[in-house]
Length: 325
Length: 282
Image (cartoon, rainbow over all chains, first blue to last red; front, top):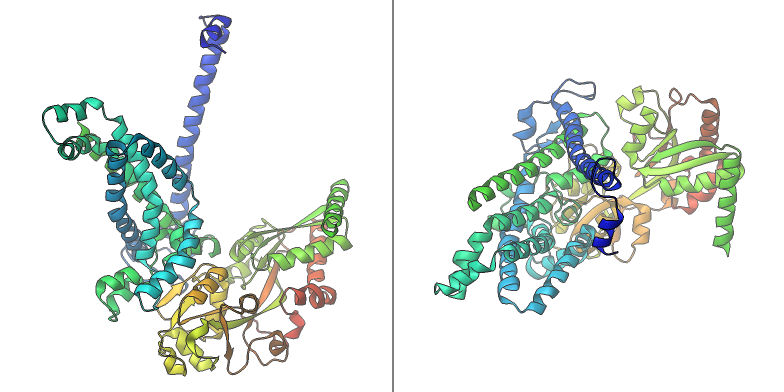
């Protein structure tokens, strides 16, 4: 129906009129949706806090002993069946694998977006956008199976003389493939949102194509580029399934890397079976008795992950705002 | 055709059940035991048209947690309940016997390990296959996560309670363990016998103390590594008399000769009666 016609067919103005009611109704509906989302996020935080903090407090939901913050957050000694609950190796694992993935994904994602939006012909831009959207939609377990059945054996036989390839490198490679499309997609939006006048002005002042991109367009898009990277990072740090299948899940990885002497330190770091917060959660959470210190500490790990992600997002917001001001 | 008639029968049963206000017994827990208990439920419901047995997954610990809390009538589990859970007054029924075997990547050059060698392989005292008569190849230990029932069996039976070596690769499910072992040279692991049988070409079975794992060997008492599948009931939390009666009847059916010698054997488990000396702590 023609919009003009719609406007005429409704009685206009005044409280009690159909249009007024529709407006109010729609307003409340949208408000309700927004509130539900906020409530969900807050609800998850409350739930995680209740279960996670129970490990450190003598609550009814804690059937075991009360742990000290120190023995959980400042220790890497994880042996829950023997009453040792240090989670440092998981935190270090999550940061390492996410960092490694970002190291490759952030520059390559942003540069891909530069090329596609600023240099490539139009048809390629359309094609790339479709490919990126397609890649974002692939379920993570598919990446995991690919890694487990193809990538691990390949790396192991080609480069490691048949010793196992599980560890940060393969996990980070898979994460890279998973987050590059997110970063490219959002970076493309960032460049497309820039006013044409910036580019034109720079060129008119005599800068080369390269100078315009490097000195003008990328700095101008920086806040949104950072958001793109952070969202990719959020996906990487929260990914459980794909990482879990290839990383080797060894909670003792820190001491293994430190103590072993069989190869160069960097190689040991890249190819020692390791574990992250998410992989440990996905493996142990369903199998631990509710209310036990073990179970509570796992929830505390979930809470930590939540707070870390929140912290990163908020910090980047701040940085982004300062950059654009 | 057969499928269709089964489906129709199931639909008819379901309808009859609703019509008769079916007494529902909820069963929850181990995904490994799920299929065999579901099979039992189907057979049982055919014999008792007024009763409905609903089987769902969630994992052994979920089953135990739920039966303690009264969230389900029967909790099925690969592992024994924790002492705390036992204190809640739940009652254990061993329903099947599950044999376990050592498996390796096919190329390690070892066919059998003594009890001590197997222990040393997993505690880390031995780290190369040549030390047990195989190739010069690093041993890659693939094990399950700490909360896994299989790992508990392995720790008790193979490692005699000692800690695993730190140098291990951990996989979440038996399927992932088998894939890892099949694709990693030098890998060794510990799985239910049925998983070896299903993957005969990809992984190799290792005899324990010279005895290959088989149903026959367990039955004759020659092969010592197995665990029980458990069904736990909670008499204190099952207050409804009709539900209680139905649950007791279902457990009795699980333990009946008819089911034990029929579907249990067919599914690759062993009847509980095969195992003469009952091990009580695993």
